[in-house]
Length: 294
Ligand code: ATP
Image (cartoon, rainbow, N blue to C red; front, top):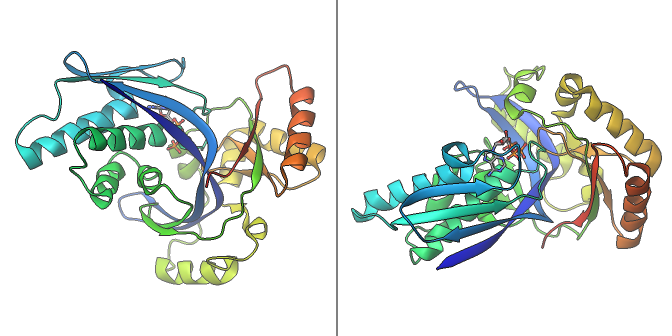
């Protein structure tokens, strides 16, 4: 028996860093949405133990893959609850399309897909909240992919509030050909707000950004851009060139390196995609035409 899951990427339409916790994690205020760009994750229930293979050269197979860790965590949690193993063996195969180290949450999405597929295989033994709590142990973005809807994320990303009425924006993405390290980008962040209380910060940001609703295009922002651009100058140069060519603002998703421009109409997005794809047909940059997932 096998289960195949489409594992979507996300973008952070805005991302503010609001605080730093004593354990070193940063607190965020972010509007996150899944996009129509995905990996394929197939689980075959066969053999014994957990095995993972991925077709991307920069993604490890085996125990260090987030999909492996998700399966292991699920089996342990199942064992604690039921006193038995949920399965003899599972072979997880990942076909990658989401840029790796691109701030699009590819690894987290794969992990969430594995947790949800295994939960379905086990007749929904865990509630969605329990599954999100398990996911958080693997990474701050994992709960969002289990939540499955556009959301305002606070805390380290685990407190999610459904964001209503996000228009079906179209996006042109550019993977500049740099894999950005999330931990390096956070470490390099010049953080000036540590003395302020997060609650006040979130309230102030809500007022500034407008919380729910309003024109989402006016809210685009990423506090991590300066840090990522100083560590990886190519992100800065591609952003500048993209803004020049498309005559509009371009933003970075998450901790980088993927850049995106937002469009209300599919035709404008298609034109912009065509322009960049032609201009950058050779070289390490990759262009994607996509849209927000409903
Ligand atoms: P994050 O912000 O969560 O780091 P990202 O989108 O910037 O996410 P990913 O594509 O998730 O980055 O990959 C980050 C690192 O995780 C890479 O070094 C990659 O080798 C490793 N990794 C482990 N498992 C996976 C997986 N299933 N898919 C992608 N990367 C994975």
